[in-house]
Image (tube, rainbow, N blue to C red; front, side, top):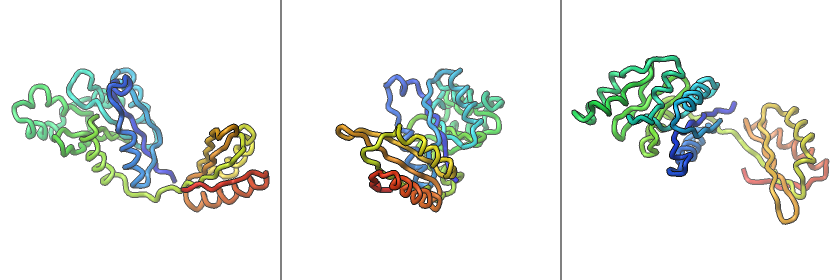
Length: 247
């Protein structure tokens, strides 16, 4: 079984090029270290209609997701509000989140910073060791701030508490030289039907005046090894030259 997590990265500044996204690669590395993969990834603007629809979509998927950004107190920080609406919950003042903010900022917590304690009803807190402004989890979603320095330790806490280490999938790859992808479509379709439990990939590229194809199979180790043996056999019967690529 493949263990996957989706990524929802929020920020118009990323789409405009004012900021460079760091969440995807950091999340991918952290997930892989525990045997998980990125199942999907979206970058969306700080726009209420778009954000609401994408959070609702993510909440209806079968895998958990990490959301980054939009947890501040400015008018373009819409994640808490949209998460509540997507889940059909009210946005209410979370007493523990409010206490942490008041403890951290004292009198300056009011009247603005305290708004960051307004969370969807029923949400659980995700501790923030940097400034004590908590993130939250709701359903299959885990919501972190957009600052990578804050999000990283919060994500690691979530992984340690809710995502037990899994046995990583195995991927094996072959390189076919002087091969054209279009000539192998029917072959690939039959192979995928014969081995539905594994994930199959085909990546063509150009080398000099010719073409080559990198074929990959991934999934549970035992199934992948069996599938690769058969893939090699079938390709050799067709006369292709094969080169094993490192795992």
